[in-house]
Length: 567
Image (cartoon, rainbow, N blue to C red):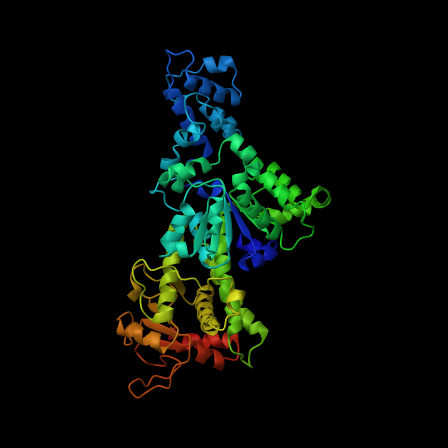
């Protein structure tokens, strides 16, 4: 996927990191956490079956079950052949029945059960509080990536048809004050909340709120056919509908895990582009789909967005511009890698000018950052959730020690490189662009050594800051096996804190302290030259600012970095 962002989808990737895209999210992002549609249909059918009163020929549960089976295409003979004494899971054609009902899911949930509320099959059949509102549910990779992209400031609006609270939980796991980051909108009244960094619009309702306040939020759970068909016409949905239409009109859309088949979405999209259709060609693409291949309902979406005439003329080009070729998990992981790397690439422009350097030399630093990104991304599978948590822990540790020289407290919040798109952040005089630029240089040099085989770059040990932020392991061909603990700090104040807290030992030759800012003139107590060890048996100590200003080229910088660090 990263290769696609470099080439065919480069305009999309650049625009995404600029914060231009709205996320439209659906059940595909939660498929590994909550039951899929077929499992839920089994649950609904089983509830109806187990409640049948065989002594009552007019049993409402029996009638509802029969109606569902008719929707599945079964004849009366087929229905009579089913042994209702046997659980649905054991029915011979259970898979075929639920598969055929999947596309008619909303119709099944709209089947009335006499004597019960109209949403009975939704609330009780699906067990909304215990299924989607279960507090024991844990966010998956998709939810964590979305939360991280929100914290990094590149996602300002996310629209979801999902009922679960997994994105909110992901934010709560990453930051101590999620309510200060995002406003969650379920009702029109919620738009009156004070603006936050981002908004999460749950236009089909929220199971967590319905669990905690059934009287207010249960009726807002949208799943039944009549609810979906009439959603855009109901007055109480007017504010929500207008806001969604404005988002679709004003911003390009990234659709992730969402089939875009519901009638209310089609109506909303059609209305949103009546007065301002998207022209073709359009850069960046107006709609990008996190899908492996185009489906019929996707074509309909693209046709509505660009207009029938434009789509008929340019269908192949529009389709190619829209389909990423990957589903939610790899797409969102790739976007996270891309965003973090893009920020490091951008802050390189903040480095003070070096008259000896050309654009080609800086491009070599960028090349090594991209190569490191790709090397790291190769380890994301198969245990991608554990990998992502390790990446988050490493980021918290690295930036915590970089800024202060002290290990972050247990449960420390995730700190983004910038809380807005990086090119916006660079416009602020308070943003430490030069410091982050030198940090990017240090990471680039460490990544180059890994790519060149001079060492293997590994993360520090989780929960043991004294083991280093990063570790450099000598290659098998090295004369002696060796491992170096690396600490990246902003300045001498952070370096002093690092040693005072006992995280790094200045007398330990297996320690390397990399300062991004200039080293002060050495005093008698510490006669070591500013470029590093140079024969000393103590810890290595390197200043990126000093090395960068003295280097004639990227190759010279790398060679001096290795020498100064005793690597």
